[in-house]
Structure formats: structure tokens, C-alpha cells
Image (cartoon, rainbow, N blue to C red):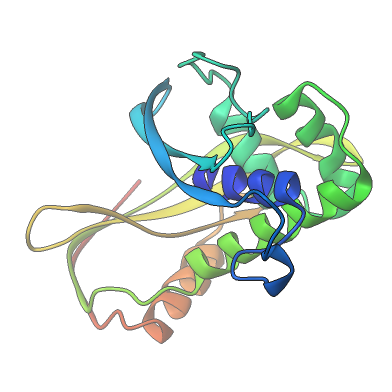
Length: 200
């Protein structure tokens, strides 16, 4: 998601989409990326920061040489779960960038986030998981007022030992119906067999 948002910011900077014919003879263009390591509550992650050919693009998502992004989990969860409308996400983008962006820019970046989220929830899955862990954690969700709701998560382990986030969704309370819906959706995406379920 961070990589996608950085690419969206570069698009805003250049004023044209990738492969857009309007980019011809503008004097500037995309020029690959460089990698940076960030320390987050999830551990160290590597992100790809895009560059422009004239070396004028400076992203606002990450301040120069800042390698810590402490509230990453809060921003991502809110980005996914607040409905991703222009007005609801404006305050999140403001926190993330620390500067004002127009509603059109926020709308464009919101669309990128929505497409990324939709692709994640609908990607094809491995047919077999050795173990699937079903669990929920309560997080604060802002929908008019702040309230605690249950983030249901399915985490699988493949036969090769790889951990895999199968799916997640938020419900008002932890209920078995939530897991049933998530598993039915996983079945539609190619999951055929689970050897062991783990739950509390």
C-alpha cells in the first residue's frame, strides 16, 4: 500500500498517468525507484520510492531520511475501513502528509487505495493450507463516533511453512458468521482444503 501511495503521489507531481501520451515532450518522466528500509511495529519493511528523471520529486509520505513510521497500522486500518470516501479520508491524508492536499488529489489517492484493497480481497489463493488460524482483535473505528469493533483475520500456513493473510474484515462483534463469510469467500478464490483450524 505504501508503494502504491508513493506512485500515486509521483503521478500527481508529474500531472499524467503512466503511459499517458500527454507525457510526451513534458521534459520530465518516471525514472525507476530506489529502496528504503523502514522500521515499523510489524518489523522492518522495504519500500520502493519512485524517482523522476529530473530528480525534482520529493515525496511527502516519508520525510527525507526518516526511517520510522510509527502509526503505520492505524493509518492502514483506517484507510481500509473508513469507507474510503474523499471527505472521510482527508484527515488521514493530512496526518500522513503533514501538508494540505486538494480534494481532487485526495480523491485520486483514495481511488488508488480502493483499487489496491479490492485486489487484495479478490486475489487467488493457494488450494491447500496446513493450518488456518481464526481470530479477532478489537480496534477503534471512527464512523461518526469512535467505537470498538472486531477485526476478524484468517491467517494460513502453507505446506512450505509460509504465513499467509487469507482475508480480514470488520464486524461489530466477534461472531462465527464472520468467519463463515470469510471462508466462503476464500473458497470462491481457490481455497479447497484446510487440514487444521485453530481458534479460541
